View 1 (cartoon, rainbow, N blue to C red):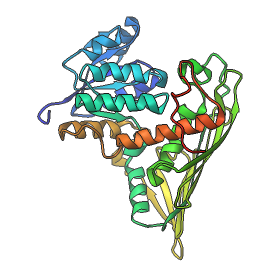
View 2 (cartoon, helix red, strand yellow; view 1 turned 90 degrees about the vertical axis):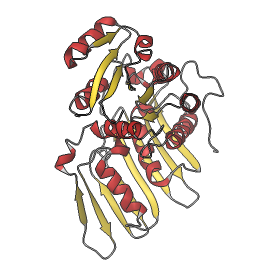
View 3 (cartoon, rainbow, N blue to C red; view 1 turned 120 degrees about the vertical axis):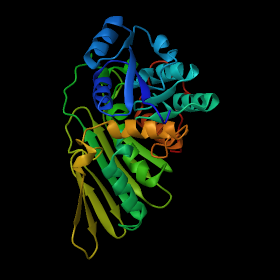
View 4 (cartoon, rainbow, N blue to C red; view 1 turned 30 degrees about the vertical axis):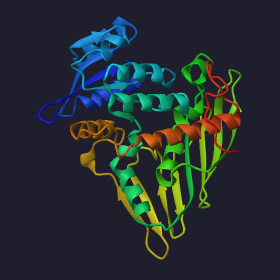
Length: 341
């Protein structure tokens, strides 16, 4: 694979699929060879838009296409288990959008399937691949602010979203948490790992999904994370990390920052900014490049987005849902993996 382009298949044709494909076609070593939708006309329109040679009206045909090196799964997260599982069963490598699945049990099934097939699998947590986020993480790990004491992060949209919208549809895994809250949770766990305790409260919709959720995560070290997500109020989408010797502030758009400020006790603030050569702040090319790097290296998972980290985030999301009382259609009592109360 190192001597030729990495050949991509795109599964689904919505907004995030279009954004990813637009960035992918700009990478010199990537080639989009096929797209699939449950509707042939949608696949045809997407293929025409991006100059893709093959368009399939069902997912199975894409999964069985042996010319594809890796499939990007861009369906709503309620369909991730089915779509990614179909591709893994067929021996395809997979990059799967977040939230990775509806619950930790589904995530564990996909990871086990990838291991059984010796296939590459990665959650499309583009934040983890962002060069400036990686710089922030390295500073924290190097002790720039001492021991982490507290993480704050929020992500909220003003809406309003009507009851018919997917964000309010339980059948599509609706609610603020899985769509938006996955970012604050993933940010906190990038820095602190999996929490030992989870507390949460939510404002619920008549349909039974969370309209906004606040969570307090805690670790045995004494560290805390205060996290918030909402589909009924636009937030600053900011983050901060407070340590025993300083603080890092990330202004709006913490999951795709263009800058952050390091405050260290007894020193002037230091501002770190994104390199213009890395592309626009909303680019998805970094996660695509990481997938291709890993495939060429023969790796079955990425060190930037490790599968155990993805599973740990899913366990935390399950615990938050348990605390606030969100359960999706088809989930039985054992579907949500709980953490200690």
